[in-house]
Length: 54
Image 1 (spheres, rainbow, N blue to C red):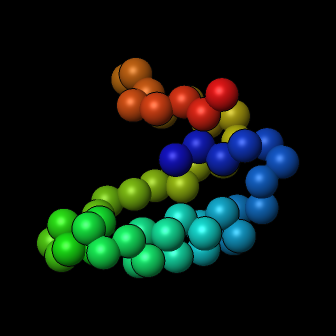
Image 2: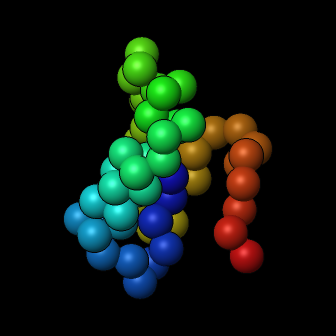
C-alpha cells in the first residue's frame, strides 16, 4: 500500500489492520498470514498496481 501524501502512517496502518480483522471472510482466508508493505507517499513499487483509489 502506498500512502496518500496527507495520510497519517500510524492511523492508516491501524485502520487497515482493524478492517482486515473485522471481516470474517478475510480473517478466515488469512489464517496463513499476509505479507503487506505500507510505503511512504510518493513511493513507486515495481509492476502495475492492482488497484488505484481515484
